[in-house]
Image (cartoon, rainbow, N blue to C red; front, side, top):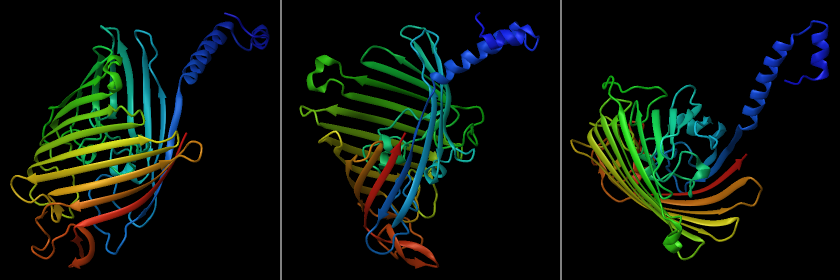
Length: 404
């Protein structure tokens, strides 16, 4: 062990011992190594929203839509501190994802609505290596992410809305080959719950999940690099403790035009009792054996390094097998979203978006039966309660995100 001259001088007068200095030096070196491999990243997410016409109290029920009409918004602030696993056989790492703001409050993981993910990663050298996550982590299914910058469109799909967002538990990922990867997991609950939350009625019962992904190899021509994904989650929700299941199938395909990618996803949700998917009615009524489906089609055209055009078309339908889903909620919705992104400033994602949601079915239930035929709006009221009067909702939005 080599010591600098100042340490040797202090040792000579008895101020420190060389043994303690050696230990302190080891701690310092370990700390510097850890800090050197740790990354800090994140973003600040803001938006502007205009909903034409009057009466916008009742908005379409996709995730994070509430309270943003006709105004300026801070959506969220995300700070991620992480150390990725290295290439060694017994590698380890961690991820802490701090999520703040109104979207974080909607996510509802608790603990001040500030932690979205926090887990330890471990690798065991079995076969090609098993990578483990223990803690709270993002759900293993879905085409879209909770973080706005990671999605082709600013607003969320109905497919995302009926999926779980995170789980507290343990999962393992194994690379079968260069083309195929499998993920298996066990968690406390299947549907939204606070960190460490348990199912209300299921006691020690747990939620189980699995997913298989496939990436087309280089000999697939223009399709090489395309991905296909299938996953399921089955267990108990974090509210009533009743059973809940999710099935997801998705794919992103390259095309003969290198600038154009297309994608699709299908989501299915079923709950024996008590969880509305999505909860976009103003009052819940008899939520036994509800189910929901969502089909989403995507396209992205990367015109230049800075300019891209992103489209999404979706069809959503839901039902409750023993009664209305919710007062005023449509049982069928058709939606179109068009997004233009042009990143003019360095580190800034800037995009404008138009979204149209159409009530394609009949409102289920009703606060006052027969008083209205629409689910959106809310200018008219009965006993002070907003009542939807519109079949269509139109929104124009701008989304500005600074990424660091």
